[in-house]
Image (cartoon, rainbow, N blue to C red; front, side, top):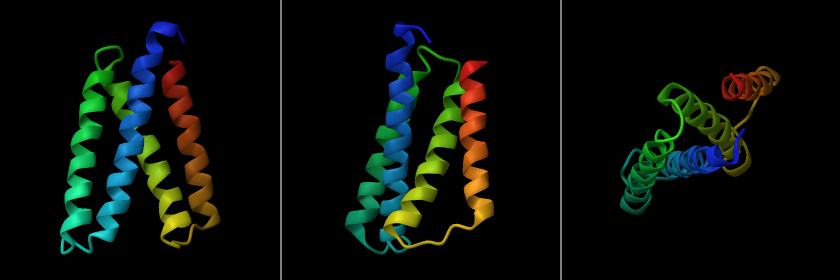
Length: 109
């Protein structure tokens, strides 16, 4: 990876982190019945899309979107496990390992 691509990769990672935060707030909003977490989730989604849009200036949309989605799924799964007490089976852990492998392969392609 060239140094000039680093800001775009960081933008995708930030977009994914914002997406994870939005998803965790969404769970706390109880179906948008709690205004604070609901509005926070919407704001974070807007910021995530802004970061993703920036990332597409320096990388293909297909790669940026796949990385954003993969990291978002991974982070949301781990966040649900660590912060919300959600159970992850061995198959879920295997799936997350495959996600990381897929994201890595996409980035190297």
